[in-house]
Length: 277
Ligand code: FAD
Image (cartoon, rainbow, N blue to C red):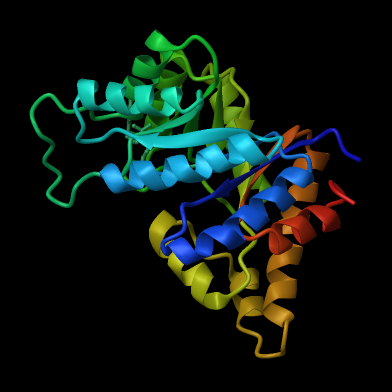
């Protein structure tokens, strides 16, 4: 129906019983023609196992490419290389290379990796296939509060071998287009795929704003507070669908949706934006 590339993010379920529902969602998301489905990653060995289980499911049961998020902060080069190798041994060769969140103390072990561009280099040095994605922040990374630093970080990741970027969520198309204008003027040449999250409750909006430090979108926040049955979901999906439509009208060729491990809300968002039937 549309030439705009679509992709989704899911996370490893917190409870094993939820894996069945996630598998169902993955089949549906892939059925929409998703180019790739990305799977989030947290620190520690058990998270590797959980991410891998979902990635392998995508590889074996869908037509979408599995894209493995990987964080590196606090690990040594050798530890990071061994995780990359483990993923590759399971047939996963596409990565979203991230720094991850700094430890609360702010202190890193001696010799530990500190930034995402170091992980990009490490993956790029040993790759024989697969793409490397990185994160971008249209409204700035919470730690930097300076768009120059954010573009510097993106340029460093591009120079290290990143093929494309996926953005943090944002609420207005102008956030993305203004960022892209600055990024292109500073030498960013890789595609930057906008990340969009349909937010269907006031509680979720609150949580997302705490995590991302984005500014509250006043009209959406007001609409999500409606007590009428179904009104919050309607408003959240409409907001995301309008955002997708404005981005596509402005020339965007790919969109990445944060799916929250279910398919109905993102499918409805894309349907209203006329990207799927
Ligand atoms: P970096 O690119 O290293 O940059 C972080 C900040 O450091 C920059 O904004 C800049 O201020 C500074 N900086 C770094 N390098 C330079 C440089 N060369 N010059 C100047 N300044 C620099 N986290 C998880 O734990 N698991 C996930 O699965 C996960 N998935 C994500 C998916 C997406 C699409 C996004 C946008 C974020 C995701 N995150 C995830 C969150 C991410 O780990 C955090 O935002 C983290 O704080 C920063 O990661 P980064 O890869 O952007 O870091």
